[in-house]
Length: 260
Image 1 (tube, rainbow, N blue to C red):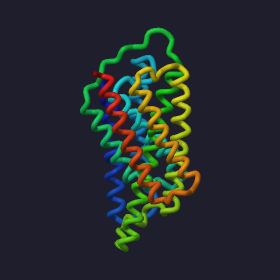
Image 2 (image 1 turned 180 degrees about the vertical axis):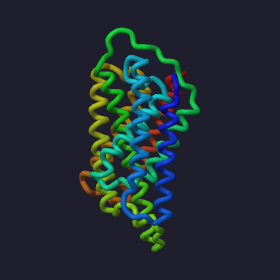
Image 3 (image 1 turned 90 degrees about the horizontal axis):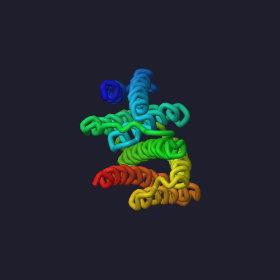
């Protein structure tokens, strides 16, 4: 299958990152339309590639680590475009763009597994499980990015060394609110995905079941801590970024073990 659309998408996110860095160096305040257009172009190219992949497979294109990484990047880009204006996170493109760029570069160096077209009717519940779960991972990725940005902001305030990009980012209050809301959104989507999967017996592999429940419990704990307001924004930021790192490692591990 042709990777041209995916390569174009990867280049668009690299361009978005370069434009973000240029805007910061030029001390340009406010949102840059060019950055948003670059992200949108990358998202459209991702969508084209996933659509073609799905048409070839006759189902949701989540059959390998390659597919999971691309779908995760698509989810991050989608939620970034939807949540950017609402939570004032447009300037977080300086972290979102390189994350998507790196993940897609990893995908591009992986061999593209051959597709086996689905025979017979596709179980819509299993398709819902796969798609919604990965979109939830995208929300967790943005929550982790918001957490990292909050920690960077705090560090500069404590050291009293305010770089020019400090004035481009949302306030710590807005970042904490965005982190909390994105964790809630991701957890809700993940719960829907797990319900759809378990109700159809998709988690028949012991390791997959343990990992899925483990990730759900991890974010359930984080949601409970955020809801009770017994956790500081600083600690919530660490937990959100750390939890997403754990999530990435487990996704890779499950894909690796499933091939053994």
